[in-house]
Amino acid sequence: MNLSHVLAIIKKDIDIELRQKYAIGGTFLFAITSAYIIYKSFGELKAMEWNILVWVIVLYAGLNAIVKSFIQEKKETYLYYYSLFGPLEVIVAKLIYNYLFTLFLSFSVIGVFSVLLGNPIKDVSLFMKALFLGALGISSVFTFVSSVSGSSSSSSTMMSILSLPLVLPSVLIMERTTAVAMRLINDSEIYEDLVILGGIDLLLIGMIVLIFPGLWKE
Image 1 (cartoon, rainbow, N blue to C red):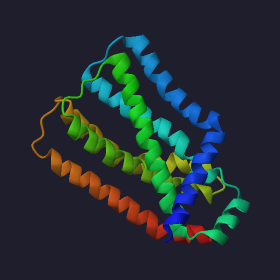
Image 2 (image 1 turned 90 degrees about the vertical axis):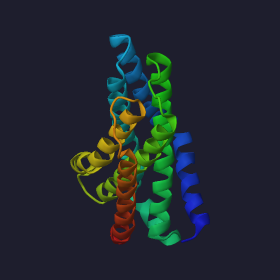
Image 3 (image 1 turned 180 degrees about the vertical axis):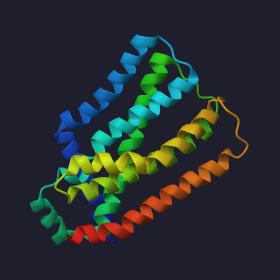
Image 4 (image 1 turned 45 degrees about the horizontal axis):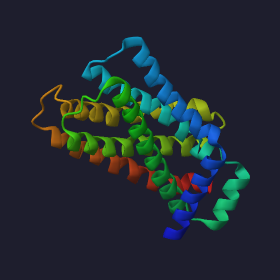
């Protein structure tokens, strides 16, 4: 795997996003508008509601954004990539880019919620660990399903069917861990949950790396 090729693909995706500002702008507008509507509707939220709504918004905003990772590419573009890059370089670049995007989206939503609805986080260190591991799981699932959907004639249907059930374990563990970080629940084995969350991430990444070369050849 050539690191310069990976960086070139990441740079290409960033350039596309910057040129198509409406796409990334629409994603963040959805997230911010959702937070503002919640603020105007409820005025204030309990910590548990704050925790749940943050991850629901991140989940659906991330789904709408990452779905286009492969679906937006034309078949001619795939052929061009095939002549320049290996499958491992392509999927690693997509994973890194979508992970960074998910992190940026998460911090944006949390920032807006903190300004409008307050910040109930008590253990910032634990919250950040859950955020970084959970974002990796979410972005990995959406990247994998997007790559599968890109080779299917019913892309949007495939994305809806496959993505949410696959991402559910990571989201549930992340939500539980961040709830502990807010002192909403007590869990003496919370760091075991972080290990499980990291294990799920590694399992997802390993599955993607093994399966994607076969999809790439098609």
